[in-house]
Length: 243
Image 1 (tube, rainbow, N blue to C red):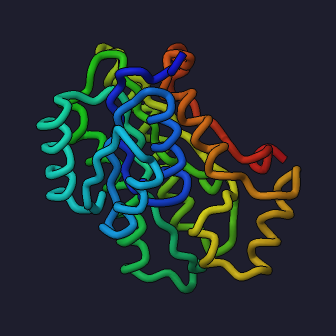
Image 2 (image 1 turned 90 degrees about the horizontal axis):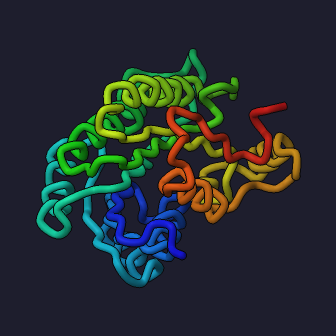
C-alpha cells in the first residue's frame, strides 16, 4: 500500500540530487508533489524524471516573493499541504580567516532565513497531523575545516525543529530534521578527487550514500509510520557522525 496516498507535498530545491530523488519517491508512494528550483531547464528535466503527479515552480527559497508565488500556486491547485520538505541549502567553503560578510549572508539567507520563511508561509495551508522535514547535515555536529559557517547554519536549522514542534503541537504537525552525510550528488562535482576521497574515508562502508537512500528516510518521516517521531535529527550517513 502506498504510504503517502492522497497526500500533497512541497519539496524545495528539488531539481536535482537528494530532493529530486525524494520527490520521485513521494510520487511512487502516492503523493502529489510541488517542486521548486531556480533553473527552469533543470526543473523541466526533473518533471520528466518524476513523470507524473508533479508541478514545478521556478523559485528561489531565499526570496520571499518567490515563496509567496509558490504557495499561491499550491493553494490554487490543491488548497492544502500535508508534507513539506524544506530542502534548499548551499555551502561555500572558507576558513575563519577567509570568510567574508558576503559568504556569511549568502549561506544564512538560503539555509536559515529561507528555511524559516518557507515553513512560515506554508503553515496557513497545512493540514492537521502534517509532517515538516528540515534539511540538516552532519556538519552541524562535526568540525569540518572550511565549513564553519555552513555548519553553524545547519545547527540553527536543528534548533528551529525543537522550537517549532512545541509551537505546532496543537495542530499535530511533526517537525523533524533529516541530516545526510556525504551523498553522491551533482553537488560533489565542486570537490576535487582528493576531497571526495577524504569524505569517503570517513564513512564506515567506504562509499558515499545515494540520493535514493535519503529519499527512503524522507518517505519514512513523511508517513504515518513515523507518527510518534517528532523533533528528531535522523542521521542518514552510514554511521559517519557516530564514530
